[in-house]
Image (cartoon, rainbow, N blue to C red):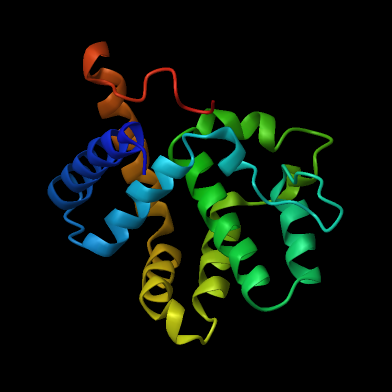
Length: 177
């Protein structure tokens, strides 16, 4: 982790702990850590759109990712479903205004319910029976169960970071690089 990523991680972790523990009463450290890590990952545009089809083309719609997941097996399939959960939670929670574009007319995602699909994808990813995933699977299951509350918490976090003085926003200019 670079020093800048470490700074972002500390910022997002503190904000997530305050929002989820204090404001929402959701004292779930592994889940809050997962959300903080997701935000640090998604600061980079390439991480938001990291799923590629077998030909190497970037997939930018949930519908495309779902079709790709059906062509994969094992860990690769699980990882696509986990990413769909992260992708839908990120957009519904952090940038809900972006959903108009993502789900606009003429797009495959026009007919995709991001909340329902995010919950379903996290649940599918949580069911992979492999001891290396046990701890993360429990978090993914809780994300599936509490998807809407997590999206709300992420919206609250965004309000907080946007209301902070500019010099206290360590990620200013980095989101979606």
